[in-house]
Length: 273
Image (cartoon, rainbow, N blue to C red):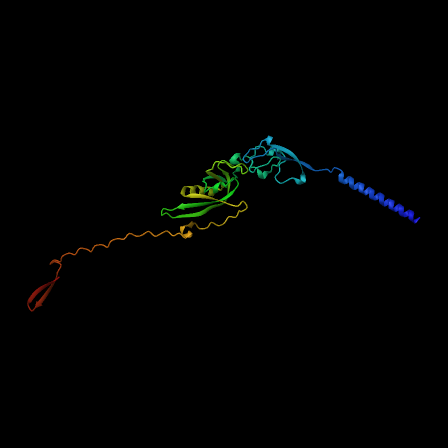
């Protein structure tokens, strides 16, 4: 009798385990409901400055919980906006990668509100041998040569963004084989005035910065030749011959001193020269 009860209890436990396993299996294999949402993505690679059209876009299904910040749900919100950062085919189009609405296309789309684009002339040296490209950041040095032949250099701008080099505005594009002679910088109004004046009064040199270095230091004093251990040699003074002595004038009777001597009632005069 006791053995019969044990067999019944074992059977009940076995059936319960079997039912529980089946229930877990059905829960894990059954299709789960997903909260999907349509998100705007690019159908092709979009270069910097391109104004987006309807054929450049498509909709992708994405879990709502995975929706990134700045994503668009409607293609109409993206059409006619210009690309500020390259977008790859199949990549979601984010607001941070687009220029402001109504900001135009090409170079004008890259000019942020309140900023100005100023081009400065560069060469192989001042352009850091062509390593400056759109998207890089630079400092601007200004050197002036004085009328006495001495010179001084100072930093007038720091951490300035290059938005174009030559006619190239896309940092992902193949560099232009021709040597650009112009770099376009994104600056404030005051900085634009400094750049224009510096270009008129002396020479400008661009200094390439690390992309992660955004520190702006206090402007140091200008560096002159004496700070390099080079003193301006003193100009030799011309040796002047001694002035000739003034010509002596022969003394005349008019120049002599007259002394009168009285002896009683008699007077005599003597002249001293």
